[in-house]
Amino acid sequence: MIAITHTPADGTILDGTSKGDGTNHLLKPLTWRWSRQLAVWYLPASRDTAPRTAVITGTAEKLRAAGHEVIVAIDGRHRDPEVVEADRAAPGSSRPGPTPSPIGVRRRRNTSPVTESRPQPTIDRACTSRPTLVRSLN
Image (cartoon, rainbow, N blue to C red; front, top):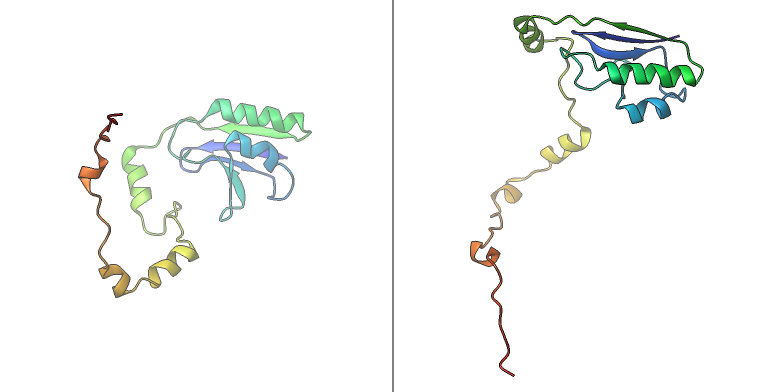
């Protein structure tokens, strides 16, 4: 059974599937994303916002049409802004920040003082003006 739940603290989460079970073909076009950290599908930027009922009901209908049993639970309440900010600012909160990619880390490590001190190219503002039209006298 697949459960689609929305709470202000957790956002909209779809649980009861696994990454390789074929539901991704139904979920990705509907803006769902796979969370490697939580091992569930989720709607991006859905925490502490109103539930996107059109997406949720559309997802439930598509999954039911594909033969899945789906339940939907929506908590439409809002949290106090102070609680939301405290949750975001708390160290080790349930809202992890972006994970740096290994490529970006490698690039930052490989910067050398030589490349950092190299002068950056400048744009000649006179060259960006409108072109001058030249007519031939023939």
